[in-house]
Image (cartoon, rainbow, N blue to C red; front, side):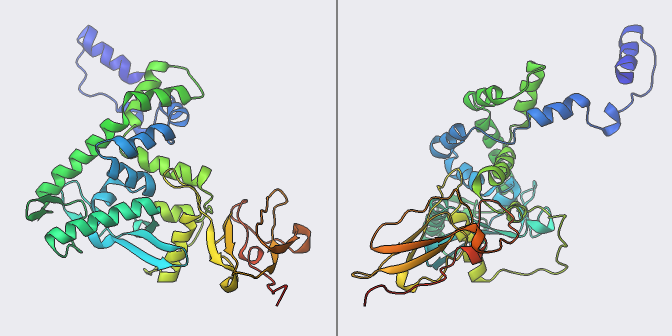
Length: 362
């Protein structure tokens, strides 16, 4: 109010005042705080976002951002060698290794925004396969591009990754994604989803300003916590956020291939906007326990055989479905002592491994 009063005196009474006080002394206004809580654009309408992932001019880029929650600088800073894959029990799994970012001036740096931003992000199979096919296509044209920027521009026989080209591309991409997200359908869906209305014009303006390329990242984080089934301690690692409740390592370290594959399997059995939760499939004669907690397992029995299957299950509300020639004994929660679980819907490994397996008929 002091600033408004001084501005009025300057404009109306022509009083000479050399300076104005800063807005709220650098603090967020009460109105802005309220709008941030009720209109924070932290969750985008799924139907509108899926439409952009399928039909927009930047469908491939928006699909990657939706599936990974990458910052714009991290996405544009990906190298061809950042995309990796592993073959295992459930087939090929793709992942991204974030090792730097593209700065606004178009130059890549190995220093990401935060130390935890050095991370591995599993991809859903469809997005990973699409990225892999693009890598193979460009590599066939231009040769080995392992250490080149994945978002480089192909022009004839040349593959451009110079800072000037990358700066223009980064700026164009950021503006184009913002324009696509601010389509009328997305805006109207966000307006209709708000729970409180107190100043419609200011609230609408706030939503419009907040709806930028970074909204994809906020939406990814919200989905992980609310819908994916990921354990809470896993989510900061996927986002590249520091977990302030845990002591951070003083030295860098890398995950082993088996650890990376388990990370990919956790994504494979979890729901995302572009990927439905998939069951783990095993051959019964080689199966001892599932590699990660899963809500669905499919065991294939050898021909002319049957098995005695004991299932450890902690939740009385779970439904177990069996088909084929087998008998099943269900072990309820009273038969063992539960341990601490970071997420209520996921079981401890001791509760989903097969405890006994034997043939009923020779």
